[in-house]
Length: 79
Image (tube, rainbow, N blue to C red; front, side, top):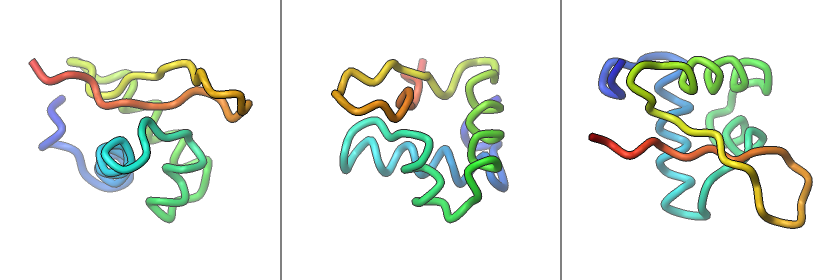
């Protein structure tokens, strides 16, 4: 799946990752939920779908900051 083919929650989460990466670096799930206005579970479901697309369009990365907010998410490099 290509990013251009996304719609609904998936498209909103993808855009939020792109915007937040540019502004503050890779976002946490909670950041994405706030940015999109989606409930946390809907955001989590969209992230899950985006993590399992072929080709990959989203990556989960361990958070190296001292906080314990879980992983952060980055857009996959485009081929």
